[in-house]
Length: 368
Ligand SMILES: [Zn+2]
Image 1: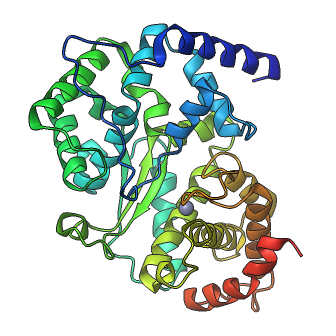
Image 2 (image 1 turned 45 degrees about the vertical axis):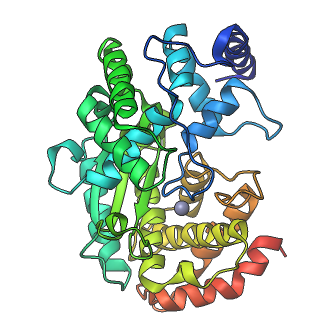
C-alpha cells in the first residue's frame, strides 16, 4: 500500500473515531465491554490489538509492516464492522488465542492446521531433531477465527480468562450475553469471522512456571493463527515466513526447557528483549544452518523482521522485542555462528548456544 492510501485509511478511521467509537456503542444488553486487566501479566501478547489502536489513532512511533497490513484489512470492513470491532476488540482478538491455549489439542479437528500444514509439520519435526531438548510433549496446533461463531466456546473461553485473571471479572450472565452478542454478530457478517485480523499471531506456551493449577496443567504448545500465515502469503514470504516463525517460537520452548527465562535481568522490558533477541538468533541459526533450513541469511532476516513480533519502539513495555536494528544484529549473529560450524553439519548443544549468545548480547544491543 502506498503512502497516500495509508493516509486515506488513517483519515477514514479517524472520522469514524470522531463519529462515535470513543464511547462504546450502547446496546440493549449493555454488558460492560470486557477489558484486559492491568494487574496481571498477559499470558499471550496480542500484537493485533495494539495495531488496531495505532490504526484508529496513529502514534508517534512510525508505522510498521504490521500496521500497513492491519490498515489494509480494516479498510475492507464496513462502518458497522469497524464499530463492532472497536467495541469488542479485546474479546474478538483474545478469544481465538485463549480458546486454543486453554482447550486446544493436537488431533482435535477444531485446531487442525489447514494453511501451510505440510510445511509446518515438517519444520516442527525437523526442529525437534535439531535442538537437543526434550520436545516430544509439545503440541502443535492452529487457531481459527470460526470460534467467534460459537457462543458456547466464546463463553467457555471468557470464563477461563476470568478465572485465570486474563480479563477483568464478569458475572456468568455478563459472559453469556457477551458471547451471544459476538456470535450473533459474526454469524450475520459472512466471512468476517475468518478475517486474518482475529488470528494474526503465533505463540509458544509452557505452563511449567505458572502457579495457577489450571494453567500449570496445560501441555506445552505451539499455536499458529491462520491470520499470520495469510499475512506472510500476502507479502510474498509464504514459503520462508511460517518456517522462520516456527523456529522463533520453538526457540521459546528451548528457553523454557533450559530455564533461560529464569536467569535474565530483573527489569521486565530488558528481560523480554533478551529472550526475544535470543529466539531471533536461534531462529536464524537454525534457518541458515546446513542441518537446519539451509536458507539464505537475508531471506531469514527479512522473514523475522517483516511483521512477526515487530521490532517496536515501546522500550519500557514488558512486551518489548528489541528495536529492528537489534533484531537484525541478533539474526546476523546467529547466521554467522551457523556459517562458522566445523564441520558444517555440527549443531551446538542448545545450552552452549545460549551461553555464547549471553556473551554476545551486550554487543548485539549496543551495536559495537
Ligand atoms: Zn518471541
